Length: 248
Ligand SMILES: Nc1ncnc2c1ncn2[C@@H]1O[C@H](COP(=O)(O)OP(=O)(O)OP(=O)(O)O)[C@@H](O)[C@H]1O
Ligand SMILES: [Mg+2]
Image (cartoon, rainbow, N blue to C red):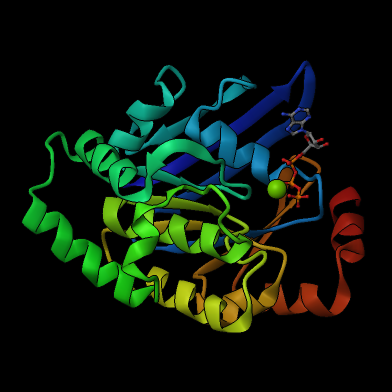
Protein backbone atom coordinates (compact mmCIF):
# COMPACT_ATOMS: atom_id res chain seq x y z
CA UNK A 1 0.00 0.00 0.00
CA UNK A 2 2.84 2.39 0.76
CA UNK A 3 3.73 2.84 -2.85
CA UNK A 4 3.07 4.40 -6.20
CA UNK A 5 1.42 1.85 -8.40
CA UNK A 6 0.83 2.31 -12.09
CA UNK A 7 -1.50 -0.24 -13.57
CA UNK A 8 -1.85 -0.89 -17.28
CA UNK A 9 -1.67 2.84 -17.93
CA UNK A 10 -2.70 4.23 -21.29
CA UNK A 11 -2.13 7.93 -21.94
CA UNK A 12 -2.90 9.96 -25.05
CA UNK A 13 -1.75 13.46 -26.00
CA UNK A 14 -3.92 15.30 -28.46
CA UNK A 15 -5.58 12.05 -29.40
CA UNK A 16 -2.33 10.19 -30.01
CA UNK A 17 -1.59 7.16 -27.79
CA UNK A 18 1.79 7.54 -26.08
CA UNK A 19 1.73 5.22 -23.08
CA UNK A 20 0.33 1.84 -24.02
CA UNK A 21 -0.12 -0.44 -21.05
CA UNK A 22 2.55 0.70 -18.63
CA UNK A 23 2.98 -1.15 -15.34
CA UNK A 24 5.26 0.08 -12.60
CA UNK A 25 5.40 -0.06 -8.81
CA UNK A 26 7.67 2.15 -6.73
CA UNK A 27 7.50 1.62 -2.95
CA UNK A 28 8.18 4.59 -0.66
CA UNK A 29 11.71 4.06 0.60
CA UNK A 30 13.13 2.94 -2.75
CA UNK A 31 14.73 4.79 -5.63
CA UNK A 32 13.88 3.53 -9.08
CA UNK A 33 15.44 4.77 -12.30
CA UNK A 34 13.73 4.92 -15.66
CA UNK A 35 15.80 4.96 -18.81
CA UNK A 36 14.58 4.87 -22.37
CA UNK A 37 15.09 6.31 -25.84
CA UNK A 38 13.97 9.84 -26.76
CA UNK A 39 10.25 9.99 -27.31
CA UNK A 40 9.51 6.71 -25.53
CA UNK A 41 7.13 8.41 -23.08
CA UNK A 42 9.16 9.16 -19.96
CA UNK A 43 8.07 12.78 -19.59
CA UNK A 44 4.55 11.77 -20.55
CA UNK A 45 4.57 9.34 -17.63
CA UNK A 46 5.74 12.10 -15.23
CA UNK A 47 3.07 14.47 -16.53
CA UNK A 48 0.37 11.84 -16.18
CA UNK A 49 1.38 11.03 -12.61
CA UNK A 50 1.13 14.71 -11.66
CA UNK A 51 -2.13 15.19 -13.53
CA UNK A 52 -1.15 17.55 -16.33
CA UNK A 53 -4.43 18.34 -18.12
CA UNK A 54 -2.98 17.79 -21.59
CA UNK A 55 -2.20 14.16 -20.88
CA UNK A 56 -5.37 12.14 -21.05
CA UNK A 57 -5.51 8.84 -19.22
CA UNK A 58 -7.48 6.58 -21.55
CA UNK A 59 -7.06 3.38 -19.57
CA UNK A 60 -5.58 1.85 -16.44
CA UNK A 61 -4.96 3.56 -13.12
CA UNK A 62 -2.41 5.50 -11.08
CA UNK A 63 -2.70 4.51 -7.44
CA UNK A 64 -0.86 6.33 -4.67
CA UNK A 65 -0.91 4.78 -1.20
CA UNK A 66 -4.02 2.83 -2.11
CA UNK A 67 -5.94 5.77 -3.60
CA UNK A 68 -6.53 6.40 -7.29
CA UNK A 69 -5.14 9.78 -8.35
CA UNK A 70 -7.04 10.06 -11.59
CA UNK A 71 -9.79 12.35 -10.30
CA UNK A 72 -7.42 14.59 -8.33
CA UNK A 73 -6.08 17.96 -9.49
CA UNK A 74 -2.29 18.43 -9.59
CA UNK A 75 -2.27 20.48 -6.36
CA UNK A 76 -4.17 17.72 -4.55
CA UNK A 77 -1.56 15.24 -5.72
CA UNK A 78 1.23 17.48 -4.43
CA UNK A 79 -0.53 17.83 -1.07
CA UNK A 80 -0.55 14.08 -0.80
CA UNK A 81 3.24 14.02 -1.01
CA UNK A 82 4.05 13.68 -4.69
CA UNK A 83 6.57 16.00 -6.30
CA UNK A 84 7.69 16.52 -9.88
CA UNK A 85 11.03 18.03 -10.81
CA UNK A 86 10.58 19.18 -14.39
CA UNK A 87 12.80 18.47 -17.38
CA UNK A 88 12.15 22.07 -18.46
CA UNK A 89 11.25 24.19 -15.39
CA UNK A 90 8.99 27.14 -16.24
CA UNK A 91 9.66 30.80 -15.49
CA UNK A 92 7.19 32.53 -13.18
CA UNK A 93 7.57 36.29 -13.46
CA UNK A 94 6.97 38.25 -10.29
CA UNK A 95 7.19 35.31 -7.87
CA UNK A 96 10.48 34.96 -6.03
CA UNK A 97 12.04 31.64 -5.13
CA UNK A 98 11.41 32.51 -1.49
CA UNK A 99 7.76 33.40 -1.88
CA UNK A 100 7.07 30.45 -4.11
CA UNK A 101 8.50 28.10 -1.50
CA UNK A 102 6.49 29.69 1.30
CA UNK A 103 3.29 29.28 -0.66
CA UNK A 104 4.11 25.76 -1.74
CA UNK A 105 4.95 24.76 1.85
CA UNK A 106 1.72 26.26 3.12
CA UNK A 107 -0.17 24.18 0.56
CA UNK A 108 1.78 21.02 1.24
CA UNK A 109 1.68 21.11 5.05
CA UNK A 110 -1.64 22.88 5.55
CA UNK A 111 -0.10 25.79 7.48
CA UNK A 112 2.32 28.62 6.81
CA UNK A 113 5.80 27.77 8.07
CA UNK A 114 7.06 30.12 10.79
CA UNK A 115 9.86 32.47 9.71
CA UNK A 116 12.25 30.78 12.08
CA UNK A 117 11.45 27.32 10.83
CA UNK A 118 11.55 28.42 7.21
CA UNK A 119 14.86 30.24 7.57
CA UNK A 120 16.55 27.37 9.35
CA UNK A 121 15.42 24.85 6.76
CA UNK A 122 16.29 27.18 3.90
CA UNK A 123 19.76 27.79 5.29
CA UNK A 124 20.38 24.08 5.53
CA UNK A 125 19.38 23.43 1.93
CA UNK A 126 21.14 26.45 0.46
CA UNK A 127 24.29 25.23 2.12
CA UNK A 128 23.83 21.65 0.98
CA UNK A 129 23.14 22.71 -2.60
CA UNK A 130 25.77 25.44 -2.64
CA UNK A 131 23.28 28.17 -3.56
CA UNK A 132 23.91 31.80 -2.58
CA UNK A 133 21.17 33.33 -0.36
CA UNK A 134 20.61 36.24 -2.83
CA UNK A 135 19.43 33.68 -5.32
CA UNK A 136 16.19 33.16 -3.39
CA UNK A 137 15.14 36.76 -4.07
CA UNK A 138 15.14 36.24 -7.82
CA UNK A 139 11.96 35.48 -9.74
CA UNK A 140 11.40 31.78 -10.17
CA UNK A 141 13.51 30.40 -13.01
CA UNK A 142 13.71 33.80 -14.71
CA UNK A 143 17.11 33.97 -16.33
CA UNK A 144 18.31 30.97 -14.34
CA UNK A 145 21.05 29.00 -16.03
CA UNK A 146 20.27 25.36 -16.79
CA UNK A 147 22.18 24.24 -13.72
CA UNK A 148 20.51 26.84 -11.47
CA UNK A 149 17.08 25.65 -12.58
CA UNK A 150 17.94 22.08 -11.66
CA UNK A 151 19.41 23.03 -8.29
CA UNK A 152 16.31 25.06 -7.59
CA UNK A 153 14.16 21.99 -8.30
CA UNK A 154 16.12 20.09 -5.66
CA UNK A 155 15.81 23.03 -3.27
CA UNK A 156 12.03 22.82 -3.68
CA UNK A 157 12.19 19.10 -3.12
CA UNK A 158 14.24 19.50 0.04
CA UNK A 159 11.85 22.09 1.46
CA UNK A 160 8.65 20.28 0.50
CA UNK A 161 9.79 16.84 1.63
CA UNK A 162 7.77 14.73 -0.76
CA UNK A 163 7.23 11.06 -0.08
CA UNK A 164 7.70 10.37 -3.76
CA UNK A 165 9.71 12.55 -6.11
CA UNK A 166 9.66 12.20 -9.85
CA UNK A 167 12.81 13.66 -11.31
CA UNK A 168 12.70 14.14 -15.05
CA UNK A 169 16.26 14.48 -16.32
CA UNK A 170 17.40 16.44 -13.31
CA UNK A 171 20.96 15.70 -14.45
CA UNK A 172 20.66 17.32 -17.87
CA UNK A 173 22.72 20.47 -18.18
CA UNK A 174 24.62 19.95 -14.93
CA UNK A 175 28.39 20.15 -14.81
CA UNK A 176 30.23 17.46 -12.88
CA UNK A 177 30.41 19.43 -9.63
CA UNK A 178 26.74 20.37 -9.79
CA UNK A 179 25.83 16.76 -10.54
CA UNK A 180 27.53 15.69 -7.33
CA UNK A 181 25.89 18.48 -5.32
CA UNK A 182 22.43 17.71 -6.65
CA UNK A 183 22.94 13.98 -6.04
CA UNK A 184 24.03 14.69 -2.47
CA UNK A 185 20.82 16.63 -1.98
CA UNK A 186 18.74 13.70 -3.19
CA UNK A 187 20.74 11.20 -1.18
CA UNK A 188 20.26 13.22 1.98
CA UNK A 189 16.49 12.71 1.60
CA UNK A 190 16.92 9.00 1.20
CA UNK A 191 15.27 6.85 3.85
CA UNK A 192 12.13 4.86 4.65
CA UNK A 193 9.86 7.89 4.07
CA UNK A 194 11.22 8.93 0.70
CA UNK A 195 10.94 7.30 -2.68
CA UNK A 196 11.94 8.54 -6.10
CA UNK A 197 11.53 7.84 -9.74
CA UNK A 198 14.65 9.13 -11.43
CA UNK A 199 14.46 9.58 -15.19
CA UNK A 200 17.81 9.82 -16.89
CA UNK A 201 19.65 9.08 -20.11
CA UNK A 202 22.98 8.56 -18.46
CA UNK A 203 24.44 5.88 -16.26
CA UNK A 204 26.70 8.53 -14.72
CA UNK A 205 23.92 9.98 -12.55
CA UNK A 206 23.25 6.51 -11.19
CA UNK A 207 26.82 6.31 -9.91
CA UNK A 208 25.84 9.09 -7.51
CA UNK A 209 22.19 8.29 -6.91
CA UNK A 210 22.40 4.52 -6.80
CA UNK A 211 19.00 3.09 -7.74
CA UNK A 212 17.43 0.03 -6.15
CA UNK A 213 15.79 -0.86 -9.46
CA UNK A 214 16.22 0.19 -13.09
CA UNK A 215 13.35 0.08 -15.60
CA UNK A 216 13.57 0.48 -19.34
CA UNK A 217 10.74 2.31 -21.07
CA UNK A 218 10.37 1.71 -24.81
CA UNK A 219 7.40 2.72 -26.93
CA UNK A 220 5.10 3.48 -24.02
CA UNK A 221 5.73 0.36 -21.96
CA UNK A 222 8.21 -0.89 -19.39
CA UNK A 223 9.97 -3.63 -21.35
CA UNK A 224 12.67 -4.61 -18.90
CA UNK A 225 13.39 -4.29 -15.20
CA UNK A 226 16.62 -5.07 -13.43
CA UNK A 227 19.18 -3.84 -10.93
CA UNK A 228 21.71 -1.06 -11.43
CA UNK A 229 23.83 -3.23 -13.73
CA UNK A 230 21.11 -2.87 -16.35
CA UNK A 231 22.09 0.80 -16.69
CA UNK A 232 25.71 -0.19 -17.29
CA UNK A 233 24.65 -2.67 -19.90
CA UNK A 234 22.64 0.03 -21.69
CA UNK A 235 25.57 2.41 -21.65
CA UNK A 236 27.66 -0.22 -23.42
CA UNK A 237 25.13 -1.70 -25.80
CA UNK A 238 22.47 0.94 -26.46
CA UNK A 239 18.79 0.12 -26.86
CA UNK A 240 18.68 -2.11 -29.95
CA UNK A 241 18.97 -5.40 -28.08
CA UNK A 242 16.19 -4.37 -25.73
CA UNK A 243 13.92 -3.39 -28.60
CA UNK A 244 14.60 -6.76 -30.26
CA UNK A 245 13.95 -8.60 -27.02
CA UNK A 246 10.70 -6.67 -26.57
CA UNK A 247 9.53 -7.63 -30.06
CA UNK A 248 10.43 -11.31 -29.69
N1 LIG B 1 2.24 18.13 -25.16
C1 LIG B 1 2.49 17.32 -26.20
N2 LIG B 1 1.99 17.62 -27.44
C2 LIG B 1 2.23 16.82 -28.49
N3 LIG B 1 2.96 15.69 -28.43
C3 LIG B 1 3.47 15.34 -27.26
C4 LIG B 1 3.27 16.14 -26.09
N4 LIG B 1 3.90 15.55 -25.05
C5 LIG B 1 4.47 14.45 -25.55
N5 LIG B 1 4.21 14.30 -26.86
C6 LIG B 1 4.71 13.24 -27.75
O1 LIG B 1 4.73 12.04 -27.01
C7 LIG B 1 5.90 11.27 -27.33
C8 LIG B 1 6.66 10.97 -26.06
O2 LIG B 1 7.21 12.17 -25.55
P1 LIG B 1 7.93 12.27 -24.13
O3 LIG B 1 8.26 13.69 -23.92
O4 LIG B 1 7.09 11.59 -23.12
O5 LIG B 1 9.24 11.40 -24.39
P2 LIG B 1 10.52 11.21 -23.47
O6 LIG B 1 10.69 9.74 -23.29
O7 LIG B 1 10.42 12.05 -22.27
O8 LIG B 1 11.69 11.75 -24.44
P3 LIG B 1 13.08 12.53 -24.08
O9 LIG B 1 14.04 11.46 -23.71
O10 LIG B 1 13.43 13.15 -25.40
O11 LIG B 1 12.80 13.53 -23.02
C9 LIG B 1 6.68 12.10 -28.34
O12 LIG B 1 6.38 11.62 -29.63
C10 LIG B 1 6.16 13.49 -28.13
O13 LIG B 1 6.22 14.26 -29.31
MG1 LIG C 1 11.46 13.66 -21.53
